[in-house]
Length: 594
Figure 1 (cartoon, rainbow, N blue to C red):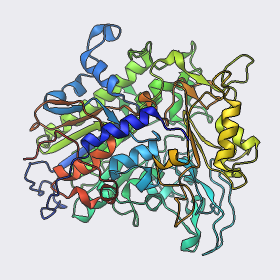
Figure 2 (figure 1 turned 90 degrees about the horizontal axis):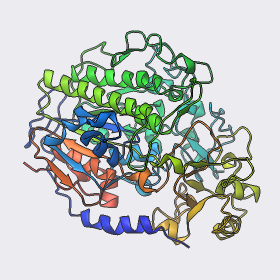
Figure 3 (figure 1 turned 120 degrees about the vertical axis):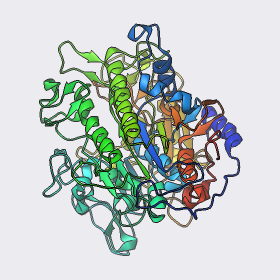
Figure 4 (figure 1 turned 180 degrees about the vertical axis):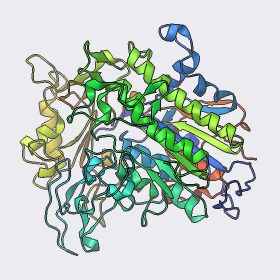
């Protein structure tokens, strides 16, 4: 039963930051009226931005400049301008696994998969049953007996639960071009809970612990969030979904369409700038340029909210106490090989020091321009002094050294020809919904990590023996680096199994491959995330407010610590978060207490 040296080192050094959390009085609560939250530190709003994929190294490089990029000049001047009033964390780590779903939930709950129960967009739960209708991505429908014995099912919280994932509005009835939100979720495509009469499990109830949006909303505050799927309304936390007063979620995996009256900086999005990637088989992630237009939809939502409007700008609304969005442009810039262009354009990095390719550089500059627009809007509305801006990332991307990327290949002589899930499936050890042998299913939970849930016909010991036999130190056809199972799993998560002795969502086995190995046969990418590698997990965290003194913090911290920190600066109790109570998550060090 092997343990990861990297993870063990991180967990031990992290203890340095687990200082007692200051319990603040929640007597001063947020109000529906803009500016009425008179806190002891003057901060009344928090703008939380996730630049998905943005490493700490990327921020260092773009803020300081590289001789090998942009003629040596800094290429994120707006982000750099936040440093003189910012606290910058160099040794910040995101969730493990470093997928968008657990990464996002870490930011808003203060918790890991141990308390939140979110392992991946597509994962597995032994206590739930299949949806009533097959999802858009192929999770098959199945039986569910109310209050009966569960059969277990893959879980899907991405575009597959949309009414129509091909549409930007997700297929919501009577919705405008971009605005479906939670109304585009098809309850028939949600996994079901037999313990609750086979009720569909909505995203906000799939997560087990509450969020900053729930705490602020309960204190009378106005909340908003924008993200890439309707399913990411999970940020609302348990309840009926109403903890988010304003949720915007244009579907990222829809077919790209022209966006009237939208411009990504100087680039018009009507028509879309990249006409090579607008076919019915494309999504917004298929193009370096079109993804900028997609992200601009969410940027415009933030600008509208800063200006005292709802996300589409159609109605007046309070400026939210907590609001924010995620950017996808940097993540796409890091991993896309766009073969529809002639000649092919490749993203990623030119070297191990993080010199961006031209495609990635342009996407970083786009994100920086957009953040500059937000800062300008805060200034114009006299909100900058009362707003803490948080810039971070749900996940990183691996490898930074693009030359080290290795995907699964069928060509003779290539080193990686299979994956851990495929090895286990060939031995009949996986549930069929998780099996790569299932031609119509959503497949196994594998990127540059492999999460394996067993079907009961094989033990973890037996499968690990197979993995070790088929991937020895030489001729390692699955690129296996570390294998976690048994006590190696319980070091990271709750023990796998069914209640009361186990967690129905914890995988039986987790495999991290060698750096650069990704369990994908795609020829359109050169990086991925989900794993435990440094490039996957070391992300930027910058907190900025004109009242902060500049500070660089070098001790280890995690993105989980952002959630309790947000509540503290708003004058609310960090311990109102259930994950903070369960996991002892500390506020970020170095944040001033006025």
